Amino acid sequence: MSAVLQTELAADRKAFYDKIDKANVTPLWEVLHNIITATPSTPCKPHLWKWDQMWPWIQEAGRLISAQEAERRVLVLENPGLRGRSSITHSLYAGLQLILPGEVAPSHRHSQSALRFILLGRGAYTAVDGEKVTMGVGDFVITPSWTFHDHGNPSEEPMVWMDGLDVPLVELLDAQFMEKGPQEAQHTNRTEGDNLAQFGNTMKPVEYRAKSRTSPLFWYPYGRTREALETLAQAHDAHPCWGHKLQYTNPVSGDWAMPTIGTFMQLLPKGFKGKDYRSTDSTVYAVVEGKGRCRFGGETLVFGPRDVFVCPSWLPYRLEADEQAVLFSFSDRPVQQALDLWREAF
Ligand code: 1HN
Image (cartoon, rainbow, N blue to C red; front, side):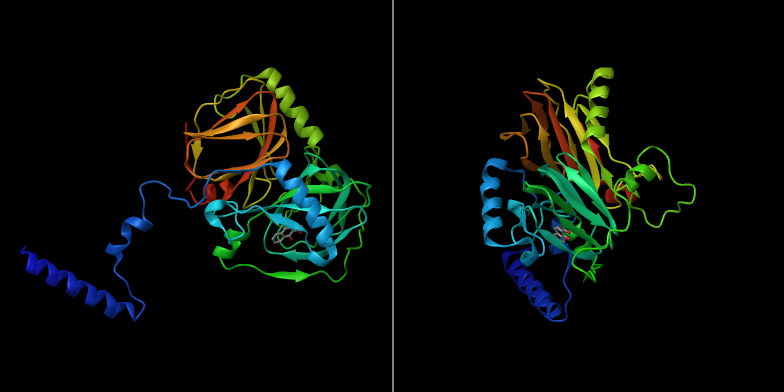
C-alpha cells in the first residue's frame, strides 16, 4: 500500500474509532493483546514490610486514635503497584491491627471474610457470633462472611495481628454488604473453648449441619500447628521449594478453611535453600519465627519475625532460611481452584 493510502486508512480508522467511542463501543483489535496476555501480567509487586519499621508507627497510631473512634485501628499494607486501592495483592487486603489494653473494637458484620494472624501479645479476644476466643502469637482465627464480630483486650499488653480479607475480590464482584452490630460488644453466650471442643478434635457434634462453606472451627491455635510441623520435619524430607507446608482445612468438609482465602503454615529447616517456585495465586507471607530471605531473580527480601512480604502471581521466587523459620501465608488459591484457573510451576 502506498504511503498516501496508508495515511488515509489510518485517518479513516481514527475517525471510525472516535465515532463509535461516543456510543461506548471500542474495537477489540486495539486492546486484545493488553487484556489477553501470554502469562499473568499483575500490577502486584514483590514487597516487604519490616516489623522494626511498622511497630513505631503502630504505636504512634495508638496514641493518635482509639480503637473505638477508628472502629478498627489498622495500618493498611498497600502493594506498591496498587497504591490507593487498599490491596496487598490484586484480590486481597492486608493490614496490621492494634488493640491496646482495655480497648474494645465495636461489633459489626460484612460480606467480606476475614482472617486474623496474631503477631504480638496474648490475651485479647475476638468474639464471633457470640463466642469468644482468647488469642496468642501464631494463632490463626477466622471471621466468616456475615458474622458479627468485635474484639477486646482485657490483658495488660498491646496486641497486634495481621488482618487478611477478600475486600478487593468482593468489590470486583459488587457483592458487599455491611452493618453495625446492635450492641458495641456482643453478649457472649457460649463457653470459651466450646468451638475447639466441638470441631478441633477430628470429631463433630452429631447434630451439626453445615450452614456455610467456611470452617465451623474458627480458632487454630499455634501450639498444635507448630507441633505438627515439628513432627513432620523429623519424619519427612523437606520439599525442594516449600520445605514442610500444611494448609489449614475445614475439619468437616476437608476443603479449605475459608472459601475465598487459602491459608498455610510452613517450616523451613535451618540452612534451607529453596528452588524457584511460582504459582498464579499472589501470596502474602507473615513470618512467625526465624530469619531468611525471599529471592526474586535480582531482588532479595530479607525477613525476620513479624515481617510481612508479598510474592506476586507467576513471578518465580525462592525461600531460604538461616535459622529454622516458620511462615504463615494466605492467597486466593481456593477461588482459582474452584474456577479451574490455578497453576503452579517449579
Ligand atoms: C474489619 O472488619 C476488620 O473486624 C479489620 O477487625 C480490617 C478491613 C476492611 C474491612 C473490614 C475487623 C478490615 C475490616
